[in-house]
Image (tube, rainbow, N blue to C red; front, side):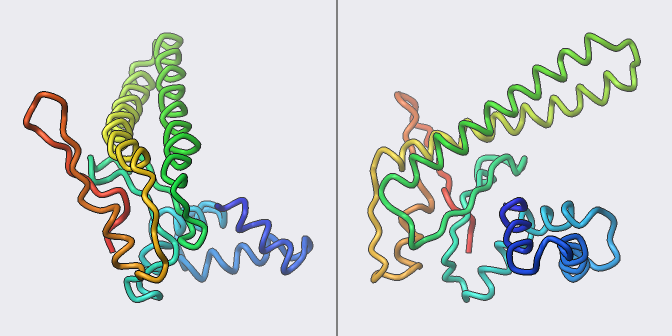
Length: 195
């Protein structure tokens, strides 16, 4: 999203003033904080954009945020969709194109860090790599749990009717219960961020 946002600013205001405009935007979002303009803009999209969007649209957002935190606290997965482009295949595409892709990246990072642990004898570096691996493993577990919910909903090919309004349509993807085979345990999770 940062890349697309940067291209938008470049197209609207021109290449010559791109760096200046990104700096201005970043400072407007997070004044007097550390980080490059790209880091600040990325942080905004990851942490604050959706909250602001929900406020502006009075809890009836036109962008919907998929979020895996219902299954953990690792903040492993987030994705935005535009409500008016939703169709019954959207959930499946989010799953295969974004969630599975991110899981593979996490798993690849873990393998790379395992290699680095074996390549260094520095105990401090090894400890740092192990800590990062543990964080990534939590993200992988959170994504796998979330994937069960996404898969369950994707297989239902749920249609929405814009005339029903955001509240009614949004509710179709919240508090999803998934039975776990023979066990009486169920996974109960929301597909989308709370509004």
